[in-house]
Length: 516
Image (cartoon, rainbow, N blue to C red):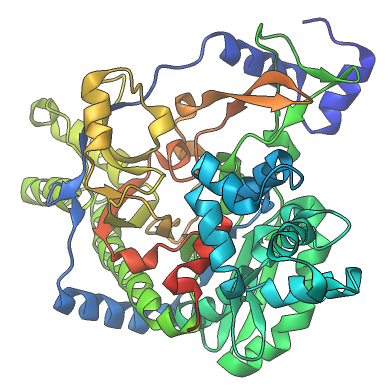
């Protein structure tokens, strides 16, 4: 490509090089093959099912050990709430009050979700704020008919000159309506952290946010911190980071030529997989990961926390044995029996499929092989029973080199035109609620470089629209997909109550988001 001096200046301002950008362009021309799933992970075959006694023991072990460890709660929180209100934006675009009633519009288009929104509107956490705003704007508000009030309500919560919820970070939207105050998801994460991530009365939290939203988060923190600290008897140390511009990708048109807006190259964020760089900067023994919108009202919090602690207890228990074995592999006197013991541990506890050629290796090569497998970050991931929710799931994946490993895979990564792949994906028993506990240090206490454990070939190309024109953009390997592909992985079944995302505005009506 021939770049102008202006292009070069723009590229370098992002911290990118021409070589990196050209490599991105090559990837558009020859995207990688889709992930090949060999089988879905199931109970007893990649997913652990805990007994009540197991859960209690793991919780106790975590409680004992965490006092000696550094613990951080890591929360991806960069998204605006626009997708939550997609249905309402479509309604505003399509609906003509001069031609039909809202009920007629709903019935004609069979939009049951919109019907649910309007008939349960008073249960929404921002209902009272929106009504107060409408009364300020319209002196004769009480004289409006029902359709006029409903239409005004939607405009009030969405439009930029009013509450502008579509452009507010999801983490700062009103989420839960308590008796005396309205809580945001951001605030709920503080309460949650106090329950399981507090060490000696102090909880460390890290949020990845959009650079443009930093002041909003900081302002909210100032408003709530003292109150939450008082209620939880916990001190909070909260840090923020942004998705680095060096992870942005150049968008292209449908002919794989650089996409420009007013003659300026268009760079876009490359998906949540870019956050592996942010995660890599966290100095902690244990890192909990959960999305910003996956929270509950306080009466369900203890049940959520119970399983968070159990996952952490399992991580620490497995890690303790892995560290002992990693240290043993450094010994010059390691026995054949110990090698067999370590091999069994890797297979049965860390879900590592040992090479079929392993028994043919000389002892020296067996040791090197086992070292390469055991000296990796460890993640313990909660998995819930499949209830047709969108998102990734646990699968056994066959790689190009013939190796098989346990991975979290999204449907977009799989070639669904292949009958066997579609069948495996469709019939999966569990899916990923993004409830992950990570161990990111080795047995010496040294942090792994997490960027060394990415499967860079699991990126994919997606099609978007900008100013009415179609474009293509690269998505990096997802944070818990390809970006953690070479981690040691343990999947544990957790109850569905641990999964409470707010993908649409109506999700706020679910019982885990309602106080009454």
